[in-house]
Length: 88
Ligand SMILES: [Zn+2]
Image (cartoon, rainbow, N blue to C red; front, top):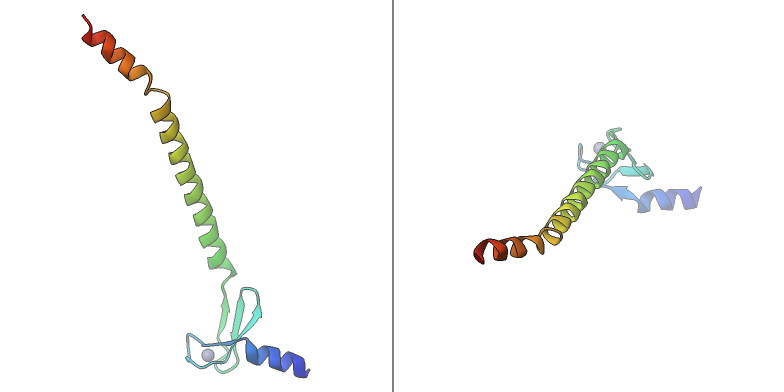
């Protein structure tokens, strides 16, 4: 019981509604204010942010891979074509 109280005191955060240090982290992504009974579940927004980040990362990766393969493969072809056109 005493250990639990100390743990609760240790993890108090400032409440965004009443700005008192009475916000308890009940779970990894759940906050509850002991003062004004403010509830916040940050799992939804956190999941959305991480999903957007993952999608953005994959788009970035695709862009990097496609631009790298585009600049790598036609590069040896273009000078050869230009030399053939300039030669006669
Ligand atoms: Zn509060």
